[in-house]
Amino acid sequence: MKKSLVYIGILAALAVACSKGAKQPAYVVQPSDSVYTAQNALSVYAKDPARALVIIDSALIVGNTSQFEADYVKATIYGRSPIDPQKDKALRLCLELLQSDSTQAVDATRAKHRMDVLDIMAGIYRVNNDDENGLKYAIELVDLYRAWGYEANALRAEAEMGVMLTSIGREEEGLKKIDTALEGLSKDALSMDCLDGWIVSAKRKIKVLFDLHRQEEVLPLAQQIIDKLDHFQSHYEDYEQDCTRLRSDYGIHMRWSQFYQSQAHGFLGAAYAMMGKLKEARKEMAIYEDSDLGRSFSGRRTISPTWKLLGEWDKLLDIDAQMESRMGADTINADYAVVLRDRSDAANAHGRYQEALAWLGRYVSLQEKLVLQQQKGQAHDYAAKYHAKEQEMDIQMAREEARMKNKIIIAIFVLFVLTAVALVYFAWQRKIISKKNKALVRLINDKTHVSREAPQTQPSDQMRELFQAIDSAIRSEKLYANASLQRQDILDRFNLRRQALNEVIAAFTDEDSFPSYINNIRLDEAVRLLREERNLTITAIADAVGFSPANFRIAFKQRFAITPAEYRNNA
Image (tube, rainbow, N blue to C red; front, side, top):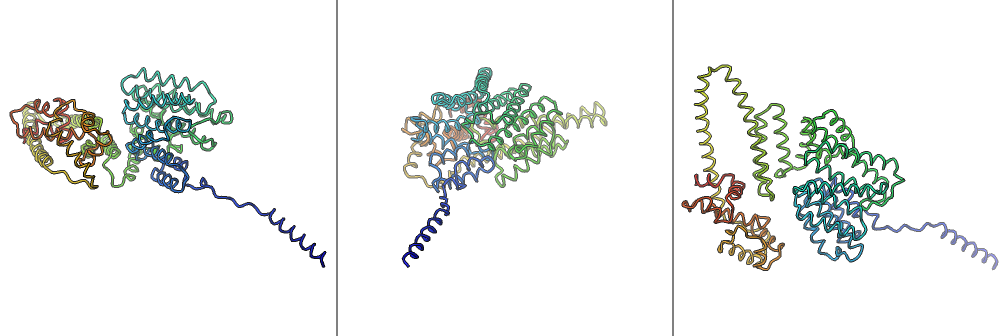
């Protein structure tokens, strides 16, 4: 009996031991298994920035990312998204990040954080044509890269500097800096980091060459991109996996190389089209269209100017239709202005001149609404383009009318009739212009007497008192009359930071910057003087409100759509 019990006990122990040995350990779920990670947000932002923002916010909530990384990813999404970029938000985030402890370059991790933020800022300032700030941050970025041993990245950043130098008129110096970067990045032929930097730098040079209308030099450089990436794909195992911008993943690297190859074919297509080599251009565009990039909306949108050069109006208008569909009800933007201009050009190319003129009129109307959002004189350029196009169409229409009239009217009678018609036409035009100007004058007078609405979000009493003090000083002491008045003068007088002044102005005015706020005060005062002080010349009024005569006329017309002289004549 006792032996039986012993045997039973041994068997039971063996059974338990076997069951424990056969049992697989349970898998512990890791945070990185979630779709809510910074890497996933960065992988989708180019196609779906809204989704990327949701992912990074969720990653922060579940603890998969730090506050710094979340803000950095948001800045990347806002600043680099090809769909609805919000560069002002990106810059604000970057400036805040540069002040945080995470970007004080006291160790390698924090230095890398600072480099990443500076890289975004330099790129945004370059795209925004703010070369002064762009160069400042690019120089700091290059110094940091070199100090911490990122030579390939330093050379790539120097290529960015080269682009900025060319945009301020220092073309040879800028191109030389880009060429130096390309030469340095070519030395380590099998480094993926150097290859990535070389391709980005080559793209920067191609952009400069297009701007300088040296498209024939684009051809060999774009072909080099294709050849280098062909070699990379064929000898992938020989390359050092040292790229600082990409994860070490074969699939990602192949998509990266195919993306840049597609872009290079797009560059070739654009260059050939500009050179009038339409057969070669269409061949390259066919390759581009057959790529993943060419089939994407952002890729098709990027290449739309080439379709215009090739006269492929159906393709161009199809892209515009997709762009308009994505906008929804929000059509007060520069992208919709492009759509209107494309439709005008397409109608004009097909001989539908009245339709072209109608689209062009809508385009100009939209530009007038956008002019207040422009900060670097873009509205003036658009107006110049409109007038040039209008003159071109008027000439074409006049020639057609002349050919028809010359067939049926005797020379002397034609001279008499044309003279009479011209007199009537000019009188009619003057009447229309006078009527329009009087309506504009009434509108201006009404607007300059309307009290400003209270802000939707109620600022603090302290902010209200500060704004009243600033506004009162500027108006009562006529600080605006000083043409050299600077933002710093107000900052020093009221002991303010730049951001604080911007916040106060934004809270109590419709303006988004100090220069816009001051200029509108000057223009309001100018309207009063033009209406009430008839003895003052327009030059004297411009000087009295702090404008040069030329700048006064431009600023007045941009805001009110008529010149100071036209306003006074109709007031």
